[in-house]
Length: 310
Image 1 (cartoon, one colour):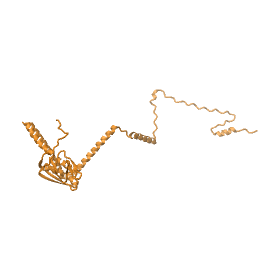
Image 2 (spheres, helix red, strand yellow):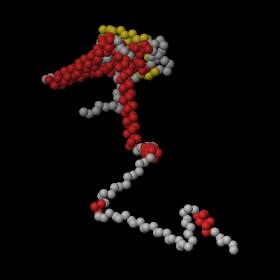
Image 3 (tube, helix red, strand yellow):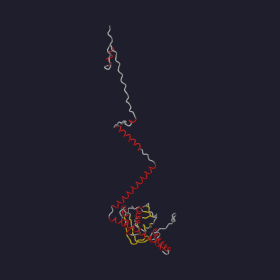
Image 4 (cartoon, one colour):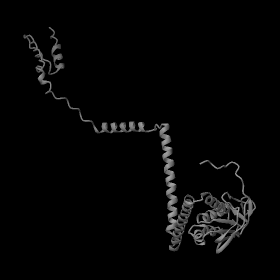
């Protein structure tokens, strides 16, 4: 008889140690079912809700923190650039810039002026102080004269006669300033030689302004009387034009005023004489007890200007 097939044993061997081969003559035992797990009993009562702890967040890794920081920087840069400027903010910025620029220019000019005085000699500084004192004294004297004239008008028994006298006196003074009458008195004569032709109209104007600031009362340049509306221009063929009249070198300033005030004003450091010398010109000052300013101008009636009512 053929041997019986052993297929179940081979299959059992193939299944390995986890499979169990039933012994012959015994029924296979039923596997025990796993016991059902019971859900944990919930704690009773609302009084236990506060005792429950909230779960802690897991710590962020270093790489995540770096990425978050970079993202925050990008958001900040996106909010700041490009800037969103309104029209009002732009106007305020321009005004502040203009103000700062003006202050910087003023500070620089002040520092330049101080640097010139810092490098001046002691005698030059003394001369400048004397000139300032002289200007202050002249202003005080003019103030005293005006107050005296006012007192005479108020206290005079015949105010009409006193007013006429002061009017004639004032007309004479105004005639000297207007250049309609001759003027004489102590003063100086300033001669400017310009062999190189470097003296321009602006230099003569600066000289005139310095003389006026020093107390000059009547001025004549060559044969042209200087008045309140005198102007200077450069001539096309050389030289300078004063009130439309051509004036050539040497330029001769005849000035009525206090020589002790006029001479130091021209010789201060960085003043008129130093400026002329830097342009190869030569300035000569002669103090005299009596000079005569005899050039006159024709008075012109104003076309548009009229006395304003009080």
